[in-house]
Length: 394
Image (cartoon, rainbow, N blue to C red; front, side):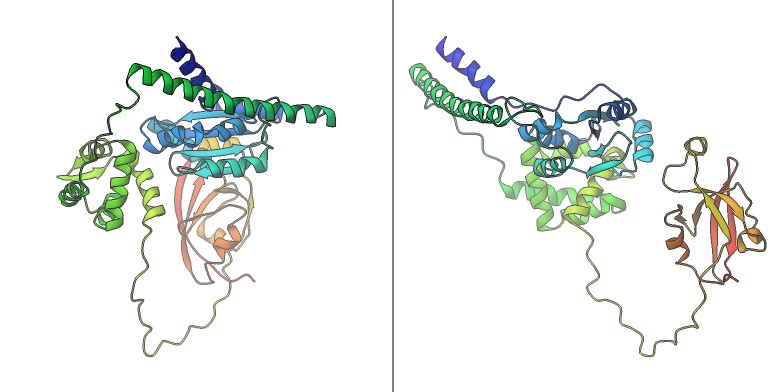
């Protein structure tokens, strides 16, 4: 009875919590934020994402992160379904999961966390948005010095009482286990397989991997010492064998193993962080007699005036913000008019670069008078490609 009571008390005293995710949709959460003034912490995750599982077990189970999360409307957006993931990526412009965005009531982004993020980074950023709630009894805005002193004394006494409780419980548990004769009979944990065996398994795996795309990058990384060490560390953390990990994350295609589509983004993001592409060791030498620079060309001129797209326009065309705008005017005799652009057309890209009202100047700066480029436009719902030759502005 004493040991059962002690272990129960210990569980209550030491148990950590997890963030309580609201059942609201992201739009309902933003509407609630607008009313209450409480920011929205939106977490985009997928069931098959191993990094999401780590995020849940680590940062989102950290006591300090959980405590700070009470100052936010916390919503978890499930993007396991391919169509849901596609819509979420288009609307909120992120690459892969896990991904966290903090919004205010107006939908403005206050903070963003891309990929697996440690608790310390969440704490640091969230504290700049909302002051962390005080542990224990939450103080009101109208407290006077006397109330504050009482709260501080309560916090101190609670901390001391918890410390004494932990020590007492430890003594009780140790005493009861010794009486039961099991205090010193704990078996050592099983030993991990020798590192040499795992190295051999990895060496045997490398030829089976495809050479193209992100799988090819991983194959090259896996052949290095750093790659083998990383894989062995990950297997230890996940308590998996190499065979189990390959079965989960890779599939066979054309006789080679290739990363499964749902994990491709996470693998590429991981490689960008731990194995970025190396610059060429021997940069190309300049020619002995470099050609004379051509005569300087004048800045490119197109001859249009933009106006913003409405939300209804974007929805009808399936275009994600912030790119694209409608032509409010096409100047007579301009390159735009000669190319066939008309008032009301929606301009999406120039020379393969997506445009917006904000970056139009930067995109046009990449062209000179006399250059030719392809424009992608929407005329009604009809998508067209038009060639234009820029002139200088007269």
